[in-house]
Image 1 (cartoon, one colour):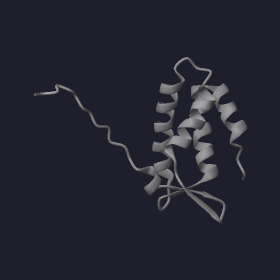
Image 2 (cartoon, rainbow, N blue to C red; image 1 turned 60 degrees about the vertical axis):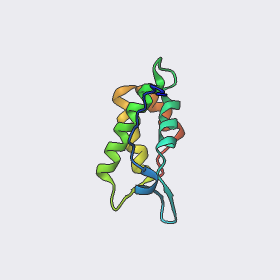
Image 3 (cartoon, rainbow, N blue to C red; image 1 turned 90 degrees about the vertical axis):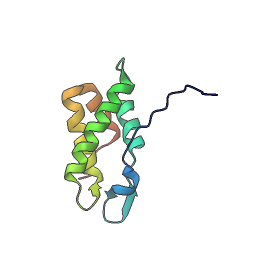
Amino acid sequence: MVCGATFTSIEQSAYERALVVRYGKDRVVPFSRDQLFLSIYDACKHRTVAVSDAGALTNTIIAKLWRMATGGSIERDDLVAVAAATLTPFDAAAAVHYQAFHPLHR
């Protein structure tokens, strides 16, 4: 008997093990793609295709973060700045919303 089902696989980096976010001198947490996605989605939820927009924006932000990571870590404010800078030309209202909930601590 043959089931005839088609299976696919999607490869994805394990960011939680490869990248950490520093919150000042004392606090370090694993990077969470899901947490970034949800914050971008929340800023973009007024858009008709918010899920796909948030997914693409999240991937763009992560690519930028990888280029600036030092020793597998990034500062929390750098993450926020990159996300805001990526959102601004795409959707100014989303950028304002994101920045309202994720202010810089510099």
